[in-house]
Image (cartoon, rainbow over all chains, first blue to last red; front, side, top):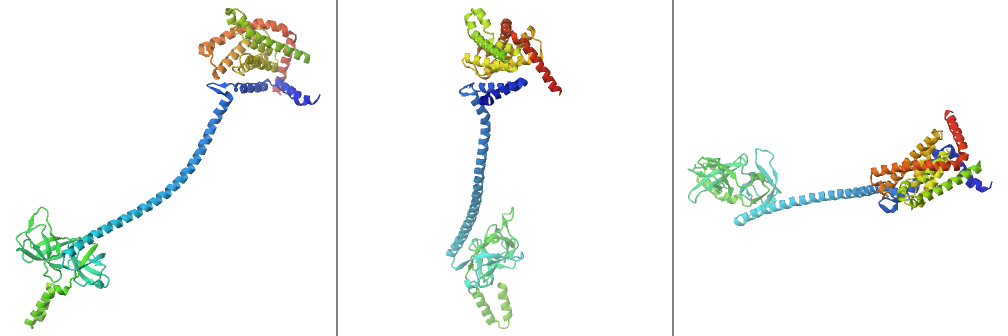
Length: 322
Length: 194
């Protein structure tokens, strides 16, 4: 009974005794040993691999695949997250840039429009003998009954009451109130407004009348002597006889009624040539009212001298001409 | 008793060596007609089954493992462990049958040899198939079935002759082992009852 008995023989004997009592236990061990031995055969179709290796690969490869995919998913997810975050920031920057560009574009459009308007005003000024000053429309009348606008130029810029105001298309109205830095302009569509007008059909045949304001940005022309025929679309211009507006300013055109080519009434509607509804930049003609009214005033003074008994009446008639 | 065990082990080893010798040479020495028939006989299996008939489970399974090792060693190590697995299961199957049917007669022997032969051949062919070993017998179900049947017939025929010889060789211990087996069964029954 040496150490060999306890270390080698005794466990074997114990194993055999146990196997004798329960042979199934030994069968299990031997079956496992045989399956392990079989696993060391070459795998079918893979001459360089044992079955053990192939089985190990077959078992571990799905796990590895899952782990690899999980790692890739996490990595991609992290990458996607940062990409998404960057994209979000980039998107925000792009939006801001787009907004900035849109604003710039609107600003540029506005400038182009203003330049066009200025050009048209300048063109008019270059062909006219009158000096004019450009002004921006900064306000409109809140009351619908009155058609007035406020411009950003006033008496400090040389603007006086009753000075004519024009836009790119034609006559706009006249200044009614001035302040040092702004003025209020009565539009020719205002019902209180009146201007001497003429339809220049021919050099010999000139129809005189008075253009007064009407609602909905429309004016009406009341003839002094009703004509036989008035063609639609004929130009209506200032006559220069009212002491306010100089002669030859375009007021508008005779409105063409539906299905009618010509009309012969005593009153016709006139479409203003100036864009009354969308005024932005206007020009104030710096023509002293006194200059226009000089002849009227002188005539009134002469009448006053000739008829000293009726001074009040002649003054009243001169006012009514205005 | 211990001396008797060693003697039985030695006889088993000799039988196994003789069986592998016969299995590897006999078919070549005999004429082709007889040799082809004898080629289906699995002598190692017959020895293993005979040892298992002695109702010694450990010895039976060890014999099966040893027979498998010999078979693999002398068959070119084409499918290591497959023969051993077949012999091991055959040994256990035989032991299971004879532990239930205590009687030791020719009918029981035929039964266990038939069962072992079918199990051994089936397991081998199954594992050969799984391992992708290209054998003509694995070409189809018909050839597999015919192989199993031919093996069964050959083993049954050979076992009758072989077991007569082995009976004479192992006769001294046969009665003793039968009594031990009965005693073991009775002991296990008592354990289950308790």
